[in-house]
Length: 298
Image (tube, rainbow, N blue to C red; front, side, top):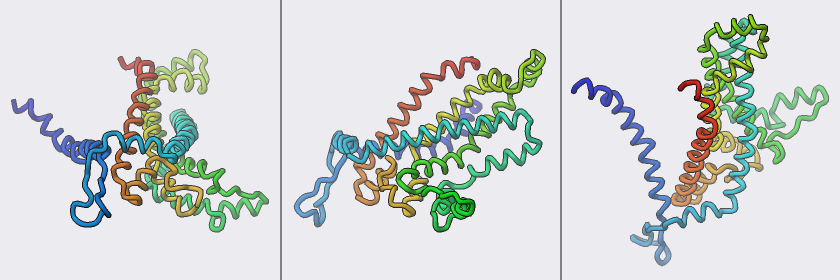
């Protein structure tokens, strides 16, 4: 009996923390999304503001908000830039390191991974000053050779400026995940392929990439979720440019509704919509590619 209870004893702290800091807030957000404040008279005095049932009214207001759809479209365009570029760079770097083409493997891995260790807010501040024409050394260097640098925080370039920060910070993490998966492949497969006359590129494309398919799916899923939840980068860059609105992303809209307009009920509804969309997209993606990617593990 004691042996049977031991696993639950070890799991208990994690389960308590999960329930207190993840499950409970999600349930509470769902509760708030179905409530609203009813104001009586001028809204002054005790009992003038009462919380009443709202049904799906907050969801209707959230989905019909004229600023919600543009923010979703903006995040979609952001994801189309970030996810393929970041995973492509991570895969290429992992393959190069695994192929032994660099003799400074430890230094290279650390250098590529290091940007991931920089918090998103600090990274956004650093890149923000590099983007500002008046203080950016990049602008000065390009100007010295006769090249006019574009204004990275203008309306035409700000999407790429935000995407660049995410790519710079996330490539190292994904590279480490893919590189670890590559190192787990038996070297006998590569030796047999070389005996058959396969080149390094053929080995990479026909052996390595298919085998690490599950890791590619996992990194894609993590990147997709991070894309849907983008917040720190545009929020930090916003004081540096007037091209980033308070509703530039859905999460920024949630922040504005909750802490600027003091409408926690609408913010809760939007949060639930974002969480549901994240779950549906992630589940749909896993159903679409999971059976093929994980077939070798069955």
